Image (cartoon, rainbow, N blue to C red; front, side, top):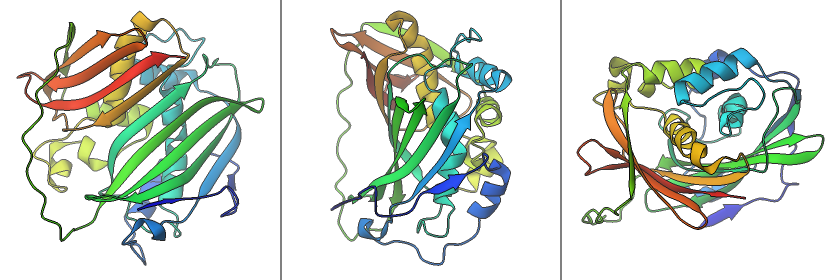
Length: 295
């Protein structure tokens, strides 16, 4: 069952400045008074901020950890997600949002960039909870981020998150699909401190990414790489062949990348763009899959 919203369902929260991620994480550990059991209990929520400038030093840190070539002129295509991250948190730690932040799983992400964003620009950012749906695994909800310059939309994304809900249905274990063949391959050595470096650059300090000891608290044997780091690192590699910032990239996050690891970007070129998968060193597990095309 899907539950969507109109823009008039709820007033917009206007912020005068970006909230502190530290204070937001403190709020995130507080228990929710009510936890939703189905998608129709997820309300429409919107938060926005206007006239935001860019910090070249922060962008350089992000570019370095993700593999982008930052020219001090235009932003890495995926950077607006980082800029909007504290707005995502602000929405999800609000008393009106009926799901706990810790334990949510980022399962899919789409980015549509219509052009390069200049370092000298100022932008407005809107984040809305635009749709929720019940699935076999639990409740999925979409956070839609819109970045505007002089009133024009220049960048959009949809981040789909999952809150697991116990189901009485018996899930049958399916055999893993046969892996596709790709023509091109690029290996990456993902260091143990990648999660900490990306957390510092992005503000996303979820403990499952920081250290193996904090990750074990949430059931992981080691710290895992951020999904949006994996996406950004992929885009940094493929964009050198695409040679444009006007693109659409969609990804599905599959199996976690434990830190440290050696992984491989498998990709192919099509008439529309590229398809790709991030796999483990043994080439028997997919961490992320997706496609990118020019607009």
